Length: 196
Image (cartoon, rainbow, N blue to C red):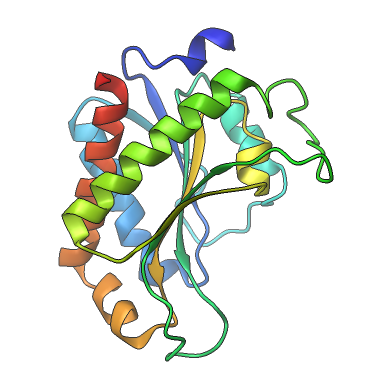
């Protein structure tokens, strides 16, 4: 496991689909998969259809059973306050260890300093690249104890690529053109991660 923490030559990438309406948002993840594969990456999807995959441990377990270099969880955000929530922008999350939420399946690696360092590095590169390609509002490079970040034994980030319940942003993120900008930013961030 330890050798997987240090980025060397690209080998594999996990992406995780977790959307309220998979049919609307899946094209972005599939565009990302296609683009990365065209560049020589091997992409393993946690799901590619609208099936339920347990978010507490199963997505992380799937990732942990591979020799993937990283885990990227792709989301679109929502406040739950309706189509004029007033919230917009892109957020990127890395893992913040907390004593009050213990790891279930990743006790050895969840708070490993090297894993945390490379998760932050990956998150930072992707966040800055996506902001540059989309010109979206910077809603923060943040750290939380989300299950997919806590239970994954490799560098891991969770991307919130825009708010579905903001009417303006929702229209934008549903377009193929804007989704391509998101994909371009994610890919550029991954490439910077490997090259620096």
